[in-house]
Length: 79
Image 1: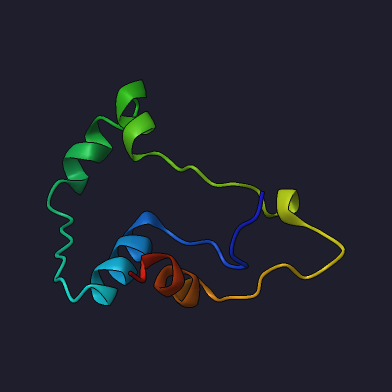
Image 2: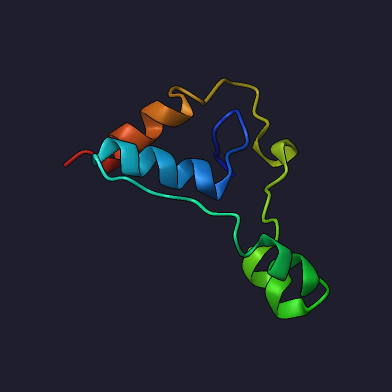
């Protein structure tokens, strides 16, 4: 399971991609109280839940991370 050295949130991923393409993204916490209210519901947790891959799955004897998170976004988004 290749991945970056550091964990990255979806919001950070969107911010970096939008910054690279010179787009402005606004994030709001306006709906957070409503989401917390329905947090026990399965469908809300599936949509807004945590999907983290354990770092132990990416442990190799050799160092395979050659690029930082920001550099990897830049390389994959270049045209």
